[in-house]
Length: 146
Image 1 (tube, rainbow, N blue to C red):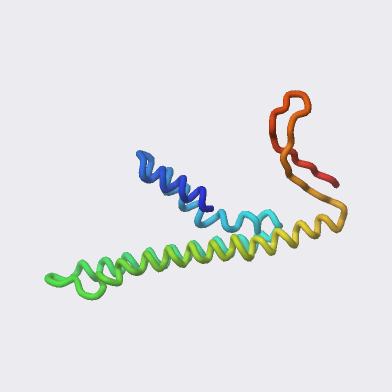
Image 2: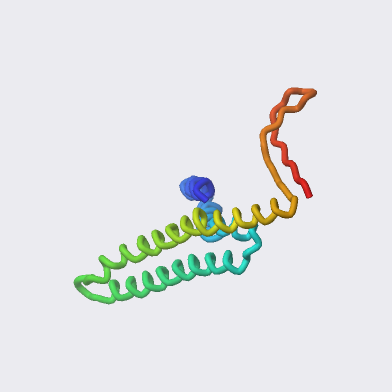
């Protein structure tokens, strides 16, 4: 999630802001649920994506409403202008906080339970470093036992 957000931020800062926005958005909404999808609990994964999407939509609608209220006055913008800057920050913080919660706690529990269930029935997946015996090149070895 963090690597995608950083890469997206770099793309936003460069000459490809749309690509960066797509990377950041996808990392915030979908990446925290990747482990939950892997564990086979797609309903819970989609719920997490919906919560983050609802938070973004709510913050966006509230920001637009407050922006229209702040711009409607002739002389002084009023208190809505101060809140206008606060709402997107709180919305973004809520989305990131929920994503971190899903990634660190919900996803970890789901993946651990799924992998333990696989190991009880004799199935195992392991990933580790590997060095070619012929050429000495390093690589990655994946072992799957069914």
